[in-house]
Length: 317
Image (tube, rainbow, N blue to C red; front, side):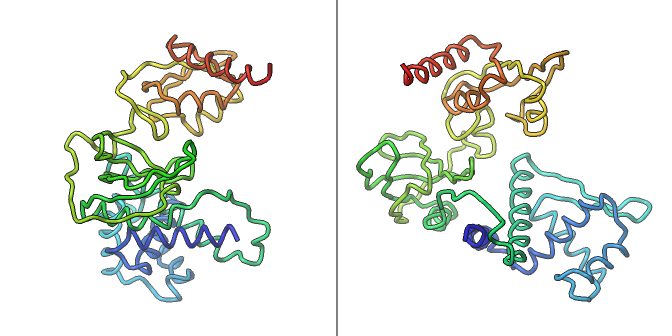
């Protein structure tokens, strides 16, 4: 069942990333964070009463010393600070980089989904998720190599090749999740180029004895800052303006296309502005919205969209 596979994948990811944190403790941390976030502000007594009713509390109080230990651990592991105001109410304050916050949110959301799905087996036929390519077979090996700064060799079968490419010597720098697929980014040793490989297309992985050093000029948290997706280039960052119809603008506000997004509201439309590089992933993303958006600038991006539209129309000649 899809929901079972999703639960197993989340468990698998915890096994890889939470080596310093027992799963029962992780569950308690998530419960505390989630409860305080849902209530906004909550007293120690009210939090304790809810804890006793929860599966993690099992009718027991949270000792004061234990609660403060949990607060410190939550800040260390999730970059989330639980503050207390003069009224004795606890509330959440997030710290750390944008990437830290994104990862923490993803991990907590995944855990929450896992818990709901695990408790909903009686209605499993009414819970639908996409059957996405799995990365779990070799993710463990790739992440182990990253932790040890070891190079790997692997076989890769891309969608564009009929024959797999074998014995790829590679230094894995970091991994990225995009559109429900995991990718590893690093250096292909044969030509010293930075490459991106989908983990679900990897067939065989060997961790080698030879090591690598993380380049000082590559910061995983900012590597894709000027792009959408998993493709980047050496081009300049461009100012991009999109004219968006009111109905679609609501989605853009709720789900920004990029973290640089700015909006200028007009009577019959909105103009969303960005600072990004022009990549294939950006073109594909914009074409997804069809006639509900129009590229105002730059002209180079307008021409890229026009060229793709011509190719598409050519399929129907």
